[in-house]
Picture 1 (cartoon, rainbow, N blue to C red):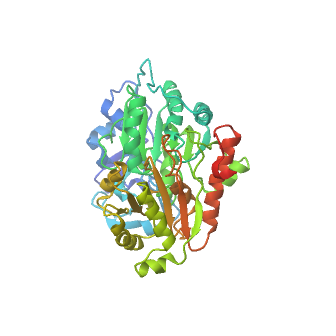
Picture 2: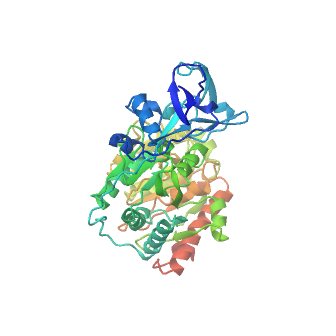
Picture 3: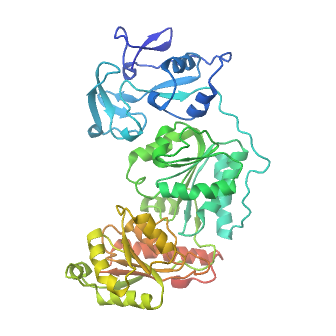
Length: 500
């Protein structure tokens, strides 16, 4: 698409005369809002707080242009230029390797486009990002916003109050909560406070399965509030809602939309390694807004900022059932990798497994690499034919996890794919090869957090089999012990468990 500037307005045109791709226009004029104009209410719903491409909207360029000329829509450059550097306005990409050029039929020039966010639709030098500049949709609140009637533990109450205060004051706050502390329930009062103040709020998480798990829980807690659930293939893509649950990828379509964002699993892949997702979260916030971070395992930098007072945070150091977190045992097992290559598992690993099979105790065993895990599966199958293994590319992954939940499997071998986001009520956990580089402090804390989550089975054994202790193993155990000590000191635990 090409534009020319006339009477302080952008005018789309097919002609090359005095017209340019939008990136080449120095300043984008914005017409004043015409209150006499009758705008399309569907455009209001679809564009409020968004940044969309023409291809995302089922409207003619004529109708879109009419709304722009009356001040109700904005055009923004899709690709920005800083001297010779290209910057994607949507995902923030600046890496030249992620840009490519193609002969563009729309503008008739060789057009640069961003490959980094191509899955959201192609954004190029002649692509405008379209947003809403008119009034926001009216939200009618029910007499009772929240239907949840549950109770919070003392640790949860403290964190819940901090979330409410941060949202009211438009502040940033970290909730550092142990695995299984009940983070979701801690959010309810803050969400209610935001909705009552007519604020638009978003819960964002790196993983689709968390969105799918949270959606029914939030719909049950806020049954009369419209909720948009956004992930790849979601039917709510064009739904305006005061409460949104989204993967961090989906936030690439938002621009200055939310008065408060709650970012769950801030330490999880792919958010931690994808700068575009971090850019998306920042861009989706209104200039004055609240930001709540949730994690069980903040990285070392954030932990230091918490300790030195540079980051506002609240810990929930205990689970609601008042029992301490299982503290991992370190057990040396020799060169387990070499033994596996020869078709054997270390004897102490075999004994650990046999003891649990005989006691009918379900177990989750983590391995650092798929080939070694599959070798272990063939060794362990003779002990019990129902033992299974699972990894990220396994097409039967969901079914195997469900069978484990149904107690149809005595043991599930897994990679780090199950380090978080799954709960089995009564399990023991082991890591074989805990010294491997893939097992970071964060991963090991999350893995240990799979045990002892249920109030009916609040204890569980966690064993790290290793061929040499690593600093990450020691830091993970230290973090768990520290949380248990803090929980006991604050009166949130009945005893300190392994922290004595």
